Length: 269
Image (cartoon, rainbow, N blue to C red):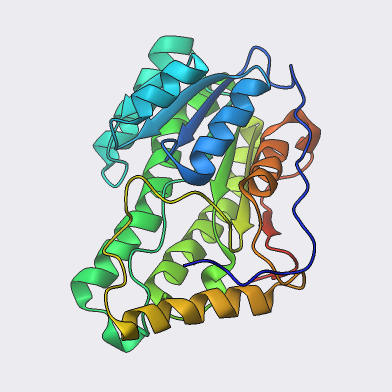
């Protein structure tokens, strides 16, 4: 469902070739959407990229970017552990970990969620970040460096997706608390909180499409609230989301840690 148009258009941020030269970047959820855009941007800025996704299509993206593809289910610790091990085996280090896996599965008022659906939302949007941070942390501590960029959401204050909001609130808590623990080892932990983002149609659906008029109306309420909460009255672009993530991952953000940066046109979540 398309967002309502707003004033102005999104500028295209500049690419900085060489900014990640000699660095290894692991991007999760890299087969589409924000994760794919981040992987492409990091590769364009000279990073050695490791692309992790549960979809086999990640192999095509890795071939395009000259990176390593890892197929893993990050909702399980074993998947996160395998992804980190593959990155380490190829490059011997991880300089940047972008935890991007997550996304709303259903859109409806909380009283209409079943217990199984609530569990599935938390499993999708909290545990991949929790597991991958845990899997990568011993390596980052051993090398005494690294940055973790978690992708949260301003939907921690939003309608018709309470379980997703709870999961992303957990991602914010991971970011703040892990930054405290990791700082003595030279590790930064930061996050962005994207607002509504225009992106191509998903090749791999997050969940069932809205099939009834009621379900479409519930989803429309999310879109309307997202646009209304933005001071800029529009959705962001993939380039705008990517620019913030890549900046936080770079040495230009070397004095930023424990921070969640809203990238939502003024909506603070």
